[in-house]
Length: 392
Image (cartoon, rainbow, N blue to C red; front, side, top):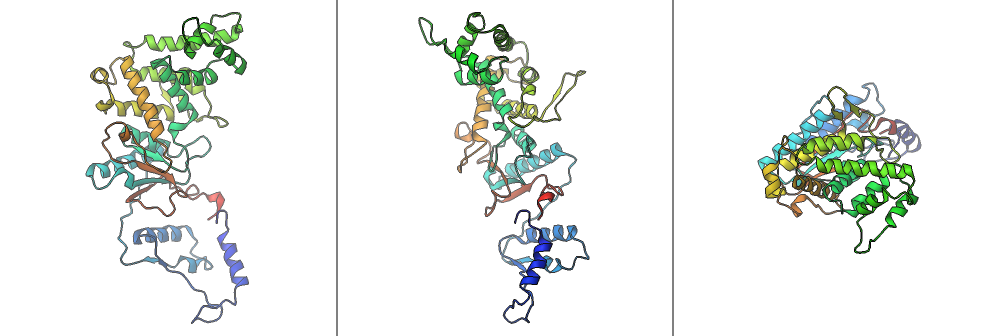
């Protein structure tokens, strides 16, 4: 049980059930269950090694609970490998490389592989975020169960909305999200006024056009609201004009520097490890790593690009509107596919995919009773998996 104190419970059992009798055994004798009928032998052996390594040798009260267990002889033996990695990124790179090697051999589907974590959220920190990034970089589809993918974070959704509105100013859903979350000095009252502009004499205006008209309407908005709106519209226009001059990577980093780094994840602070380098102009941010990994995967998947965009795609090539639109579509598709509701949905449903199915990223609770051919445990660190403060 969560939070249970095993040693205390064991003493209570001995005190209250000391007269318990097992058939064929002396009064007060204890029966030890030594056969595990659910796990492979290698898994049981590994469990014993871990348990014996973390319990004091002098602890005689728990000794009988650690009697080596055995699995049925007919159970297949699956090798267990333990890696030591330097940090989170190294761990993610190791796991994703191993997954890619398994898939490239063609021995199983992507859906036959799982990455299991203690939980998918520690405040604003997502333990599997780095693994998601590396899988995206290698073009390996995945789904997240038991929590939210980093692709569903507030900062990612805002980044996607910005990319969408740059690629297509008539996207009212993206424009509404940006208006409510990113434009400075625009509260609910001003937002309602802008939307109230509605139609001109000929046609229905898009929300972006309404924002443009409102930015110069002195009778509609206050000076501070107009200033915030003009600054946002100016940035969007700037990024559009940079098409053919700057690379898409440069534009992505500029979007992050201008807007995304300032955003907080709801009630939780954004990653405190975000740093900017004044000397190099580089930004260190886990989410930026992810969106750049998605860009890399787009370059490596020509079938996701139009003929024009494919011919001009490349890390050093200037960005075109066709490339930006392809990137925007790819972001939305991956965000939708990252979380399934009981049915695996991957990019292959829309476009040809190199790998069939999707790697399952889940928690130990969601994984109960399920089986995969290959299972990876990330963040397998003392007092984190399992959590030390919650007991055994």
